[in-house]
Figure 1 (cartoon, rainbow, N blue to C red):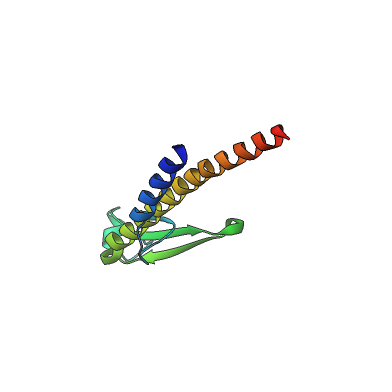
Figure 2 (figure 1 turned 30 degrees about the vertical axis):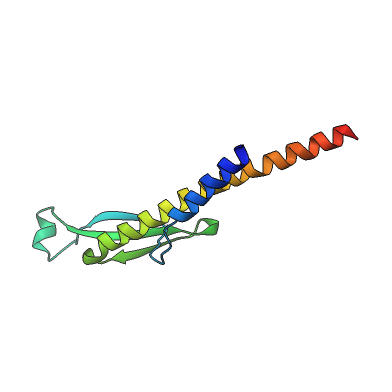
Length: 114
């Protein structure tokens, strides 16, 4: 019963996976850049709003990519797709752990009967 339930749950999750190439890992940051001279906007303390995608790689290396304002919504959508996919993969892995347990329990029972 538990096996069938886990298999159904897993298949339901697999069916919901966002099958898309629109995936992006990282964090979107909003920063304010202020020039030191010759900028009236910066002199008033307003500065210029910019968006940066920050991605950390193995070994702690970080890269930053400037994101044009007109692409911010698209980048947010891609980041969200990545998070949804990551959460679904984690849930599927947990179900697969459950699927492994009955087999392990059955093999232990068989060893005891010997």
